Length: 220
Picture 1: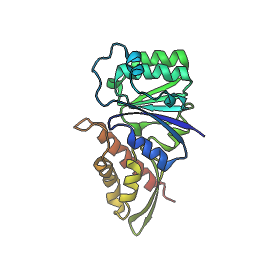
Picture 2: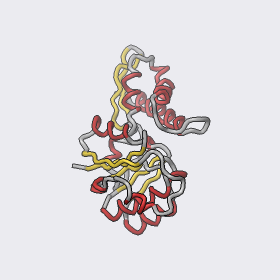
Picture 3: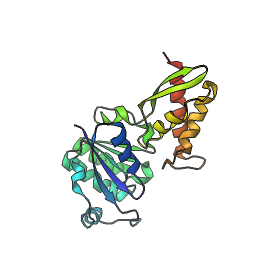
Picture 4: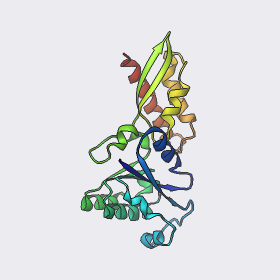
């Protein structure tokens, strides 16, 4: 059985744990970081050592870290690589991760490291499967009746669970209104993606809109 490790921090990461348990048969191990940490951590290895941080999370095949802190993320990546983790997924974008340092760790260890602004852009590669065959860039299958959405099956959905929420709420919506409605539903879901004019939440909404358009085009 594939084991997924999730490092949570404050409010971040818990929805992923719920989604894994609800929509997959993966085993999950978790470790929690404090919500409030210093802006700059001079000795991140020592900082982690002094926390009640469950190192069992590094027994995972694939890990997702919501440390959301460049110093902690690099320290976690080193520990994951040493433990033999196959793939490390880091949400939050480059501002929350020291990309040059992570690149060095990846090249030295061979561990796949992917830094994404939002997790619903994840695509499968040879290292992060089978996680990204279920969680990542949305893929849908749709059935319509009498000009309305009758059923939406989620083949692959956003790790936060927003795709499954949208699939349930979009039933009964007229086909012509469904794609933009899908995007709005995802944005109304209490997603943790950044907001504002350039926020990742808008990209997530657009991804789901396009996924529903494609599903309607491919309806059998």
